[in-house]
Amino acid sequence: ARRVPMSASTSPNAPSSLKGGNDGDEYTVTPEMIAAFERDGYVHIPGVLTEAEMAEVEEPMMRFIKGEVLPEGKDLCDMSGAVDRTPDEYTVFNAMLPRRYLPSMQGNVFEVRAASIARQLTRGKDMSIDYDQLLAKRPGSPDSIFAWHQDLAYWPPLEKDPATATCWLAIDDSTVANGCMRFLPGSNKESTLRKHAPVRISKGRMDEESSHALATQLSPADEAAVRTVEIKRGDVTVHDQRVVHGSGPNNSEGWRRAYVLAFRTSEMVEEERRLGFSHSHNDEFNWDAFHAWQEKSDAE
Image 1 (tube, rainbow, N blue to C red):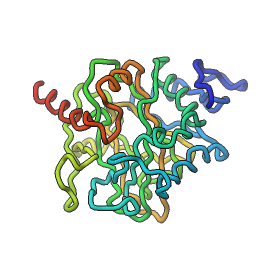
Image 2: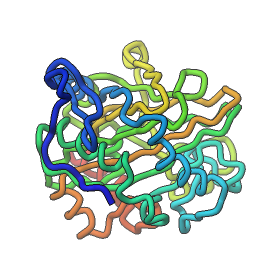
Image 3: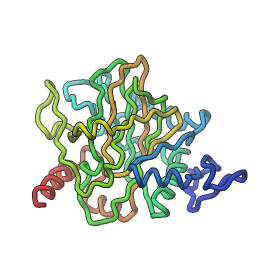
């Protein structure tokens, strides 16, 4: 496995303040990228993996999509909100914790490079991998919508440093046509978490416990401020725990695949695990987290 680097380095041809990019195991993040992440709650970072490096993530991902590796229980699900489909029918194919189910993924080039990005974007905080996730939108699937949400709504409200850098790697070019990420910039600055509720669809919904997807509502002003973020294969978006985000349907003829690697402060990861929260959809704590936020909001 590759060494996770502990300090940033810069390109020999330009200082980090002027030029970002790969430098071995590191990706040099520019001050402009850090400023965008802190201001908007997300940032687009181009060229994190080269075409030659993409196979380290793409090949294992296809083993999950083809059914060669099967996550247990609810860790394989359809994040569109449907519960009446088989995996070969999922429109938002979601595999939670693939590093757990296929340990050979651990230490791959993206994991190492993303660790350097997360550390720099959080200005040197001690960040650890909290969870990973594979997401694939089926071609020509108008319901492959990832509802508007804040990641923190899925997680317990704990009294530890909540800083998060969720690195979303495009396995395919991510476009408006195939359902790219979209963000509400500045929503990360809101003082309270927005109200969320389980995604409900016209059929195939049993009860809220059967839904793995949460949704919040956007106002007309919010809708006008939304940014769609098209990125290339090998590019990354990184978002924090509070920014409102989602993605539209895949109306194209090809897949829209992504690998997500989320970093949180080590103290937060340790506290989550102490409570039995691992981000597995099989965790008993999982829905307790959602309800805890609702109770906290009602109390305020």
